[in-house]
Picture: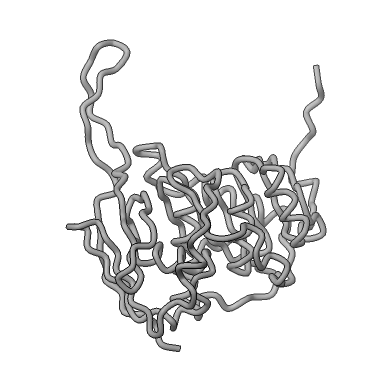
Length: 283
């Protein structure tokens, strides 16, 4: 497999601004440095993404992957990001078949920032076969605790979403961006570039974590990445729930401290109720 040549463009994730507090005092605070990134594929403008710009090359690769425009990473020759002109130039090895037709219809999703998908949202869903694997309640609690301790832009500046890829309780990658769809795309791009890091281990399933809600877009993208268990600090939408059920994907939400709700595919979650502590009685 031939991996694409990538730049390593970086941009500041936060910016210091002057604020005025409730006492009329001036303070200095960090805010996320949101910026636009226009993606060109073979010199054709495709989309403009609003992003922090932490790993823009991974984001672009993951976007192409999750939009089903590119089937394999070796179809991409290079990704060149230039923050002086806020652009990402993608060069493919043989072009993208029927790109005009495939990108003519755009669905605006519920993603924060700027979320959209090309074509029919349910295209190819039924062709996805998820891997086997179960998560224990102890592992779930371990994942939630790792996220709780993770240093993040959210803790210093707020206003961003975080996503992470786990193997069991081991966090392989943590990404933040202004929209959770960008964060999951960045993880998808990293997964393409690091197949050796994704070797399965017995009893350690791959788990996708997000601070945002589990919408249809997030469920489909997780499934396309071959991840059968998703965990959210937030909840799930009706369409996200329907698609997760259809795929047999285990969707877990409201996961904070030792509380959670398993929405779908409970057979993928090995319950250990004794770890939850005493059940609080209603007054």
